[in-house]
Length: 106
Image (spheres, helix red, strand yellow):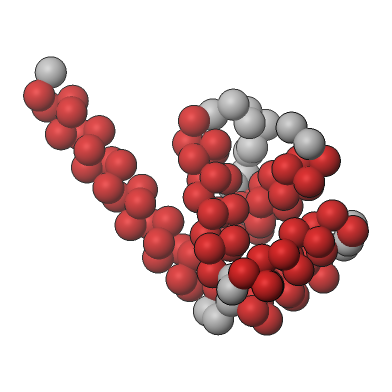
């Protein structure tokens, strides 16, 4: 993993701690945590227009202050918290439904 990917992942982990209020994320190898981290990063990046995506990546590379990165996200993604939580909830419901239906078939 290169430095840029590492910084993005660390930012996303902190976002998830703040937004979803995970109490314990010590087990970073948990598949659910991995999925949520991946979803979060994809959600953030996909909401930016191409030029803003690059600005976001540059900011992650050069800015150590999460508050400034967070301000950038909130400034350029309207209703980030609400939209993010709704989309994540939909995805998790789909996964749950799929898992439950797979379990019933066995």
